[in-house]
Amino acid sequence: MRVPNHIAIILDGNGRWAKKRGMPRSFGHVKGCENLEDICEVAKELGVKYLTVYAFSTENWKRSAEEVGGIFGLLVKYVASELEELHHNNVKVRILGDYNQIPKTAVNSIEKALTTTKDNDGLQFSIALNYGGRQEIVRAVRQICYLVENGELKGQDIDEDLISSYLYTGMENQNIPDPDLIIRTSGEEPVSYTH
Ligand code: FPP
Image (cartoon, rainbow, N blue to C red; front, top):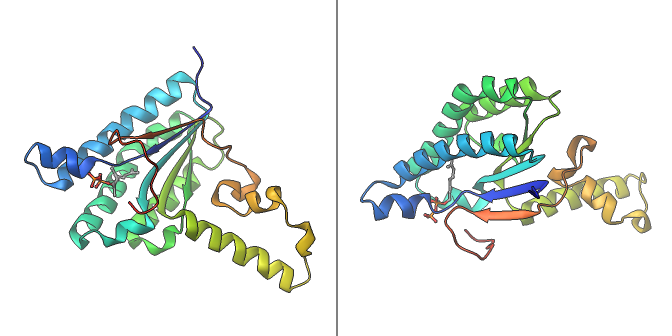
């Protein structure tokens, strides 16, 4: 069986899934989070090397404070219940996005997950949190401009590899390859940038 090296999953459709069943959106997020536990397990068993989940985009701050709080609450619960097993399974957790802007309890959980799993070399599990494609580009361009302004880099030396190394996927000199398969859990096909 051919197994994709990198699977990226956009965790969406939770709200609609719950609404269809007459339940609150938060119930959909709880179920989505439970599915994530199975996804990680299966990805590891299949020998997938990179798994990325898009959990919270920069656009998602437009949701109600209650919904946003609920999502980060789930993240804290997820780390508390799953971290030991993830570590035991040699999974390395990485975060894509400006996670310092999210609630403090969630930042603490994330930092614990990052520190605990930092030396693991099994499944590379990236969670996109407060992530936006444009925000990622702005961050990379600012960092590169800083080097140019300080004379540490010449404009003509900026190439694709350099830009890649300033994206979240290039952090710590451990380049995450492009996904081979992108899944939207809602079943929708377009990969939008406004969701
Ligand atoms: C997007 O759309 C989904 C979210 C904003 C949250 C997804 C987050 C989780 C399931 C929990 C994250 C936890 C960890 C551990 C990563 P939606 O589901 O509201 O979609 P809809 O409005 O399209 O139905």
